[in-house]
Amino acid sequence: MNPLRPAHERTNVVILAVSQALFLIAAITVMTLSGVVGQQLTSSPALATLPVALMQVGALLATFPASMLMKRIGRRPGFILGATVGGAAGGGLAAAGIAQDSFVLFNLGNLLLGIYQGFAMYYRFAAADCAGDSFRSRAISLVMAGGVAAALLGPWNASHGQSLWAAHPEAGPYLIVTALAILASLLMAFLQVPASAQPDNASSQRPLPQIISQPPFMVALIAAAIGYAVMVLVMTATPLAMRESGFAMGDAAFVMQWHVLGMFAPSFVTGSLIARFGVLNILLAGGLIMLTSVAIALSGQTLPQYWGALVALGIGWNFLFIGGSTLVTETHTVEERGKVQGINDLVIFALVAAGSLMAGALLHHLGWVGLNLTVIPFIAVTLLATTLLAFRPRLARTKKPA
Image 1 (cartoon, one colour):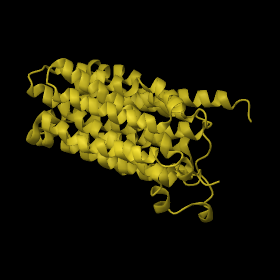
Image 2 (tube, one colour; image 1 turned 120 degrees about the vertical axis):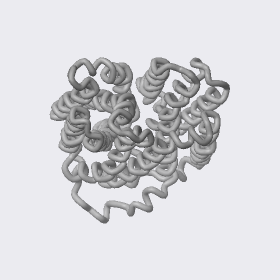
Image 3 (tube, helix red, strand yellow; image 1 turned 135 degrees about the horizontal axis):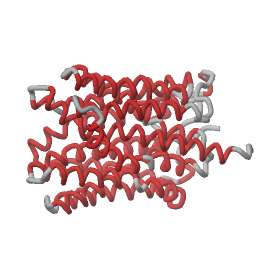
Image 4 (spheres, helix red, strand yellow; image 1 turned 180 degrees about the vertical axis):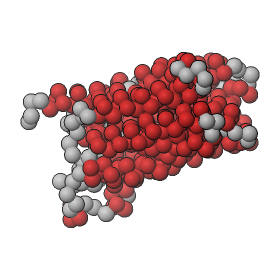
């Protein structure tokens, strides 16, 4: 065993965690500011949140191609490409759209930021690629922990970044996003991830239907996809519901900031919890915590209840997403990982995009209580699928082929 490997693992995790934080600052900036800017740039209230939705659409469009591209050229060049073409260019176009009062250009910038997201979502898998079996779940969770810094800096950028350009205040935060994306691309030059490009060997790769039909893969996908979609659906609706309840935007920002902390702060221990209690138990815990979030939301619409529901929602998402991401790495070989991880994240972001687009309509037609009741069956599916897999005999579970 190479004695430098543990040091390389730690260095890679630091680089990926910092890059994750830099990307998430961009994502939180979009979630916080792009709807407000969209409202200013279009005369149609129905289109105000289109820039936010287009970021999710961009991620959906980029997810599978990004995975297959990085299988061919490697993680490091792919991440640099995503940060520059998606992040830096997207932030710059969004700022230009604001400066030129162009809704189309602003939307295009947000779409490119979604492409940045499509590449950045593989940071967690890159950490798994370069980690030993005993460190893999911790590596994924520590990379996700980069979101803690973003939870503090993202809202700060959306607010205080507006002082950067006095003539066009809202453009300032997007210029900072551009600078941070360039910084992320420079950091990636020091990443030491094993080459993702593998010789195509059809005889060593199973057909995709055979891989995705494995019970562990199905549970991993269900947990991560449903957990992410439910989280985005409720999170997107929360500021609107709070405004309808008479709360100020400052109250909504407070709740959202704590929600993001709930999403990422547990990442410091989620990997250790998976190693100690097993990934399936963490998935079950995540589903139960999400049900707790729904129960709190249904109990009333005071500030403490919004706060408690959104914090629990974030923690539940953390367990389901990191647990699902860990489990999916156990279902494929190195040669298969490009297509498997690609289809995994493609499905996830298809549901996430649907959740973000449906949030406003569901809240309008069903109200806050109805919206939260709607997600219960989906959480129940996650719990049922995980429970069925947990009760399968250990030797009957599908394992990676030798």
